[in-house]
Image (cartoon, rainbow, N blue to C red; front, side, top):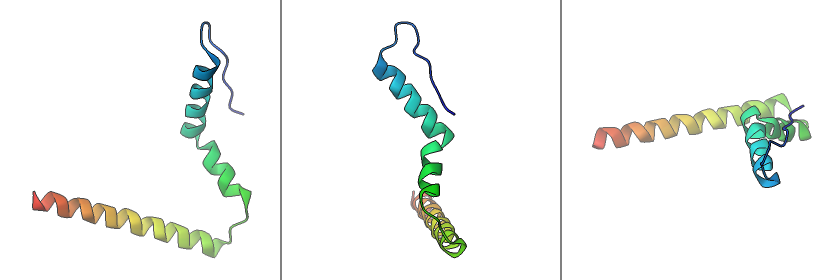
Length: 69
């Protein structure tokens, strides 16, 4: 369980901001969203393939821009 303690002289807003950073770093919210609904293995594979395709296209686009310069 992720938790933070209020530091000496720290405001609640600062502590909350620190807590949110920790959650993002540990990817807690992503995991919660992923586990919220059951996802069939075929759907998971489709999402992974789409993400891989996006990464590849982004990398190709960056290489093309590098070559043009």
